[in-house]
Image: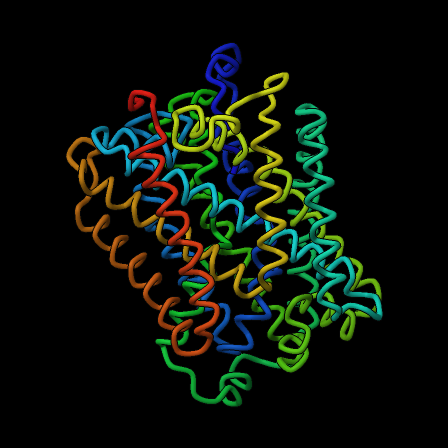
Length: 442
């Protein structure tokens, strides 16, 4: 989520990022709190088919990544999503404004999601683990901590982020190995006892898990720091998506083979920690909790850092309040405070599932717009019309399935999500039509 837009800073640096470093950047963004967030909800809906749904979600993410890669190689702009749409539709201020508002609030939703997951695991070993308001207070507190870190020092944030990213990846590998080696059932037995699950339900869960793959576009933000972007961008993104799918599927498979479904569903906000404790004892619980806290912390830190800078750029272009573009010592303090404030409001207003669904819908829609932009200039980006259309179909289907699920099962959450999108779209339209007094940026 590190949409850094300080071009003069990048020009002064050496182009030192190779494919391994770029893969690490993408994995740092994708492997945040995703698996810890979606596991309990997925098992409660489709049981043993959870790994399959996660894999299908990864396929949708790979299709979405295709257009990001093609646009990234063509434009070579560190602004990624916002800049791509702005440049593809240069005569439409509303298009630039809309993608800006949707992208930023998509990041705000993931910030809230990671903070909520952090809180769920942080208190999972205490008697008040199921207290919703304590969970919300802890979530708000961790956002405030990383807000202060980001306002205080970019260098300090970077060192903390590096440590968390690499440590969490090691712990996730260990968790996967431990779970698989302590399985107490088999897939055939689970399939026999799973009951009726339709492919339609699996696709709904696949769409719900899409937010867990958000983050691969971070590679494009580093375009000014890499050699041969036309070669390294696709290699890094496709490799990172594959590795993220592998990590998620193996952890999910280990969880369903080791932890009883009833435990996963009962403790879905912190399912891995509770289940590991029952099977492996205190050390298993502690390992999972540490992994979850590191994963979510690094994702919170990266989101606050990167998306706040993207917000400052959009505001500087005139599509958000100008006060958000102001920087102090190159740090967009006002944008950081605004992002954190909106994430806190979302935490107070919603729960884990509605935040997850809002985030997934947002990034499905944003990725759909990216696929449409790529389709519009497919000859210039040298893209396959078939693959781009498959991406559009997959992303549109995922969006419709989530909204249909909400309509059928949780209409009040659909109203909540629809209300937020209505407010975002109206705000984007107002800024494009009335408030933006600057020339349309090219």
